[in-house]
Image 1 (tube, rainbow, N blue to C red):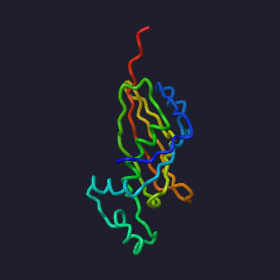
Image 2: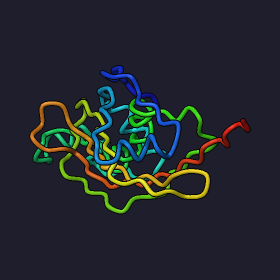
Image 3: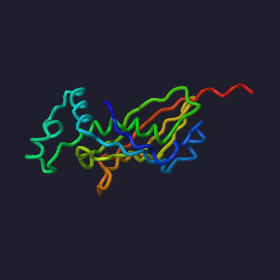
Image 4: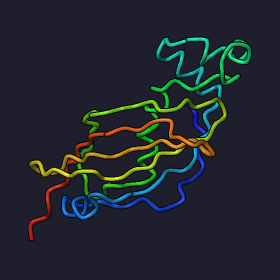
Length: 168
């Protein structure tokens, strides 16, 4: 699936250790660049997921019957873009592995109309030490450019394992 990314406004914040993450706990880390959600992206996602509901893939019917007058992105399409968005905001230069660990909460607050621009905004809510790394709870919001409400809010869990320190 191709995406139209505008570069992030800031350089990624590098986290090289548990202490780095703990120091950033409670802080807003950054916002990704804007992504234009095109009809082609929506159609590709519909094909991949077998979710071809007309509100997503039939622009003519959506123009006639939808309260928005246009197609909208799948909520799960918006959710699936979080990984690419957070990569613009953070890096883990000493990590040997990183994992999605799940979500404690996901809410699709507002629709994303076709051709809208969205971006992810990330903050570290909690950091928990684990053997060799950290479990991080992220507070995530996906903003829609010029919209009064975010499209998505979530509590996202990730796990990072850091490379062992060199003997010294």
